[in-house]
Image 1 (cartoon, rainbow, N blue to C red):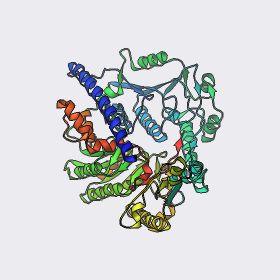
Image 2 (cartoon, one colour):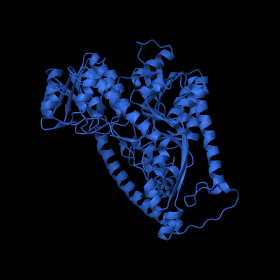
Image 3 (tube, helix red, strand yellow):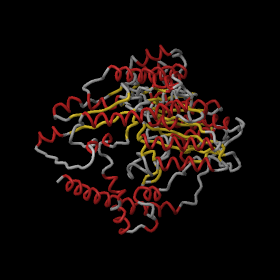
Image 4 (cartoon, helix red, strand yellow):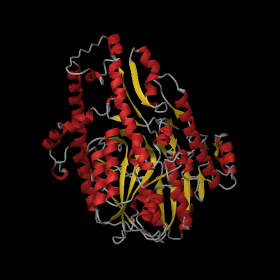
Length: 593
């Protein structure tokens, strides 16, 4: 019966996806035809340009291409464009619409660094905020270094601090007679706790409180540095802890510079640019290409780390994965390219498969053997499996608010035998071979023997992981094991533990790559993506079969590809992640607000 229901569900879902795909492709084709009419038009940069960045829209770390096309601005693109615009006399300044509710701390921090560099080149930064309504300071931290911050006079400033929320299902498991059983190396590798506990364990509480305290200290320190009159971290914390404030009070405290609406802030930025000031969306600003410049490879990866070729986790959304085959191939191709002088690997991942992480680790080792320096730039996350692939790099660059570490292993399952009995559902199983055949069963709990065998397997992964870190960081294994108990660190904390070499974002990583490749610091370089961003058609082909040609796609093709194993696997991808045996290097990252 269960197989029949799954098949029925798959058929219905497949039909729905088929219908959605038909409309997407139909309207996408019409849109492409309309767009093609003006496709020869080149967006020129006006002589007194003000770049425009809207932070109310999603800002992924790296460009994501779905069936709808590119997802819009990415953090990496914005950083690169602001860096290039520093030396562009046509660009006079930057106008930002602030995010009113919340952002990742590390995304906010890297934006702040870019704004400071942009201002240091003599250009202005004007911000309009329709309130800082969320209680996190991150969205404020992103723009606190601006020349002028406008706040709508009817809005509020509510940034008060950081809050971590963790849901626990231990009591639910008890009520439904479900048995959650997890193995962790070690006590801070707390992801399994959400299924086995009803509240924080002492190590889980300690690590989570330490994490958000570090983020809070960084946000307060930056506020004190950026806002005249606040001066000290203690004063910044005092102000945050008195929130919320009216717009008028925020102005009095020096958190903002002007009160006014969007139109007034925009007009002020235009006037500051000059008599002929014009706005240009940052997405339309093209970085001049210098084909003679030395090449540095940029290999990007964001999302959970999985084995195989991967692709978009969902063809209709910007969710992505780091696929071990794809990323390993990109690193290898960059290493073998004679024009590439160094490789930057941008990691934005909470972890994933131990096997996949090790495959990428091997590609980095082979790239270094080819004589190519490898620099890792950490984004908002580079934890657990994300740190595994960073460990062998020649240099690791992280932001103080990057979430990293989590060197440890966790795995287990929830056995639903008791819950099934409550509702009258029965699962009968037959097996041949050893006792271990039942280890991943969602019905039966572990026996003492199978749990011991599973624990031995997990310990092997832990030994490999800590060994990779010890080798990559040139640290005694005893020192690694002392900090490798599964604890998540901020970049600031990781620096103290020897897990990070330098603070900074992408621009600092580029400088480190130039130094490692013996390229003069004042020489411009060309970042080349490995692999290049796919087209929407390639994104479709990657998910549903490499033989798809979007220009010649027919109904028969769509039906055929919706019936492929890849499409069917996708329909089941949202099943419980913990039931997958290779997903063992995931960081226990709380929901931080």
